[in-house]
Length: 76
Image 1 (cartoon, rainbow, N blue to C red):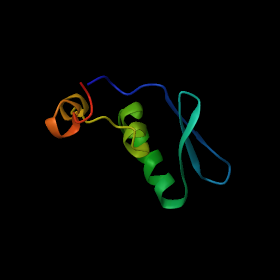
Image 2 (image 1 turned 60 degrees about the vertical axis):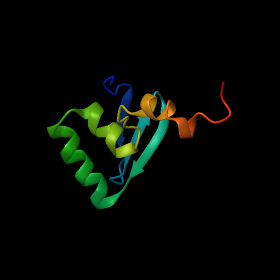
Image 3 (image 1 turned 90 degrees about the vertical axis):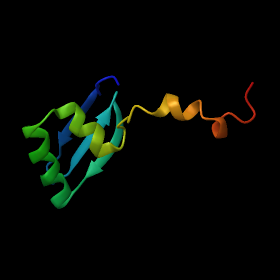
Image 4 (image 1 turned 30 degrees about the vertical axis):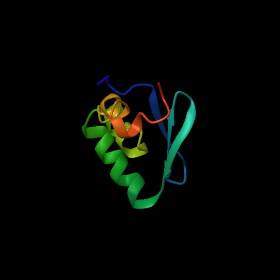
């Protein structure tokens, strides 16, 4: 599984946090969630934390699921 990359975050003046991925908005956090995110991103791997908080976290099983017989219908 490749490491997450190209995530950035910006804290706004009102305390909210905007997370972007490759320049596009991926999520906005406000209030207690923004505070929790900032604490977590400062203490861990920032790219991994941002990927997890935005839901852009790959679990590594996508290829396996694609090849399952149930998901192969209509493809030859």
